[in-house]
Length: 324
Image 1: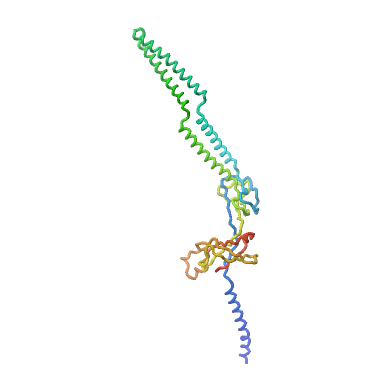
Image 2: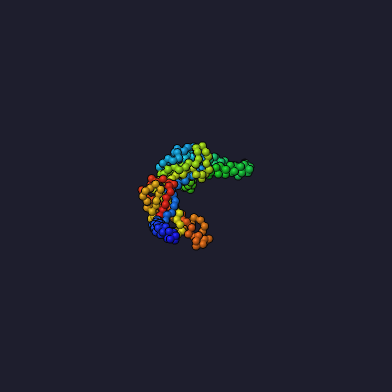
């Protein structure tokens, strides 16, 4: 009788426990496996292009900006001076090139012609003196030394005439083609330098490269930044993506372009996302150092792009991705 009293409660409890077991087993079989993560947006980092002072930050953190909006202005005083100097060099070479093309002024030609006439007159006079002294020497009425001096004067005047005539010919011939080509090459080089310096000047105005929200402005106006320092961070517009970690057991079934169901906290309906990237390497210990039991603990980072309908969702929300 005592044994019967003990068995009666067990006979009642056993069917109930068996039913709970079947419910849990059925729930485990139907509940999808999930990869956990958060919603993220593309982060665009803008760096300082020169070691200069920040003179202004027109837009505050958290503001929504369009591509091209000025975010940080670095001091441009020094670079503007460099641009001005290169522009002055271009003006100088332009003037030289114009002079080479135009040739010499008429006044310079007339002056050179006058020098030729003067030299010719001097040569004619010295030539007459040479003839006269030569006759006197032959008559032994003048010393030979006087003839030598007259000959030297004649030769000097002849050389001066040749020099004056050469100068005149040079002016009349105009600029050499080689000089013009050299000036053109110098002008092209300085113009290319101007383009580079103007680009450096424009780079001091750091603008948004995409439409998005300013996430961070790490520096304040008045601070001097080092070249390459991060001066602004943007979160790009558009639909966010879920950054999750895929278990090793599901890695083979997922590839770039795969469609996955994404659940986002606070969003009633699940979303269909597409894998835009998945790491080829596990997030930690390489596979060859793991045994068969530990390999199942490996995870691979993946990014699942949400559809455009999710563009309004903020970054940072927890997300769960159903695994195949």
